[in-house]
Amino acid sequence: MEWLEACLESLQTTVFDVMPVVIILVVFQTIILRQPIPNLRRTLVGFVCVILGLALFLVGLERALFPLGRIMAQQLTAPSFVGLDEAPLQWWDYYWVYIFAAAIGFSTTIAEPSLLAVAMKANEASDGAVSAWGLRVAVAIGVAVSIAVGVFRIVTGTPLYMYMIVGYIIVIVQTAFFAPKMIIPLAYDSGGVTTSTVTVPLVAALGLGLATTVPGRSPLLDGFGLIALASLFPMITVMGYAQISAWRAGRGQAAE
Amino acid sequence: MIVGLSGRLIAAVLPDLQLLARTARDLAPIVMVVTFFQLVVLRQPFPNLVDMLVGLVIVLFGLALFVRGLNMALFPIGEALAGAFARKGNVALLLLFAFGLGFGTTVAEPALIAVTEEAARIMAIEGVIVDEESVRRHYAVVLRYTVAGSVGTAILIGVLRILRGWSLPAIIISGYVTVVALTAFAPKWIVGIAYDSGGVTTSTVTVPLVTALGVGLAMATPGRNPMVDGFGLIAFASISPMIFLLIFGMVV
Figure 1: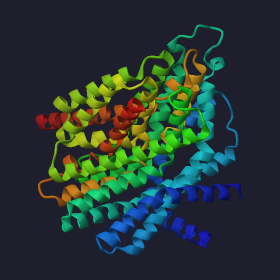
Figure 2 (figure 1 turned 180 degrees about the vertical axis):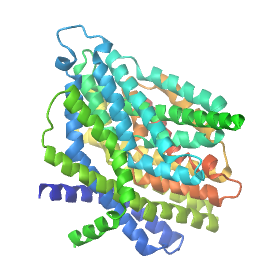
Figure 3 (figure 1 turned 30 degrees about the horizontal axis):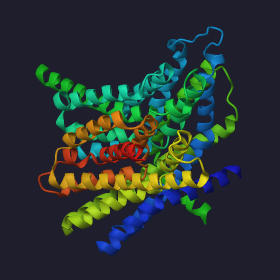
């Protein structure tokens, strides 16, 4: 019964979220463009699938995984777990936090529905040259690195903009000199899609937990920044993935 | 009726064992990470194990249904619209649609609402605005509408770029240079919020639609390549809120 109630509530929120999109689509398709919606029946069933699927996905995460993930983030960052007696703590005393940050960043990104959609589309648009799974793994590695680096930043209290600027410089150098031209727009897009439904809630809990427990950090000023890094590093790893694929393809041709 | 409908939908997904297996593979890493940390690192039993397992099954079916819906509704609609706009050849109408899609999907986004409320709270603590409920709410709403406006503008410029064939890296990199330059002048309290805002504006329903629209437009426009010109709309939508919020922090 409890589950059913939660499902219905989640369904209501999802319907509200999707409403503006549906209104814009219907207005443009039928009133402004005056085109009938193709395969109306199939499209309607598809929309119900999307709404119901998202609602179930969110309610399951919210009730089964997020609470546990949040408690974990708190426990791993608690001074009693990190080692209270060896004060003052050094940045390497938080090693389990870095490992957790990378692992949770990777695994939540693999399950991110919007990344799944972009990967499917990229595979189709490139006539199969870009592997959907390879792209998702490359993005997930980028998020894993960025969350671990972001956590390190909170522990050490170094300013966010320094990391961002270094990241931007790497992106610019890769864009200008190394990355295959075909992959660049996709790499830029993958930065924006990595952080939505699954990653943000868990990562935000981790950042806030750390900023609260590490001495000298303020949750207001230092809790931010994990999402920003998580939108930046995947660009680097996706371009890197394309560079490696191109290099391996080139080497394969040379060997023949 | 709901039970009957969901029964039919589950029946639509259940026979597709391949889809369910792929979805299970997508979720396996999370389950492994959580299990490892709970049992090996923290050495604690799972609280409410039954609840967790029920939740996982629900997550599995939810994600499988979503993927089904992507292929049945979101992708075809994005493509159909791109095709219709290309045939009609009315650029102004297309740009209006692009703005509406960006604005409309962002303004109701729960993640954005949360971020703007947080931003208003920080502004009050930093003494930028008066710490009163009504003032904070006012600023949160102003912030939300302007971020939504910036996303609408970003999608509009992104669509125009596909039609005209402008180079994406040049635009995005000058966007980053702008972000870095603004960071130097913006007050410290806005920087973290602004940087994080880029990630929260692109929702799970918008991304497939916008991507299908971009790729569809690139395929329908002569001389454009779906990979080189079709992608990039999401990148625009992630950068513009950063720029806007940094300016907002300087102006307030």
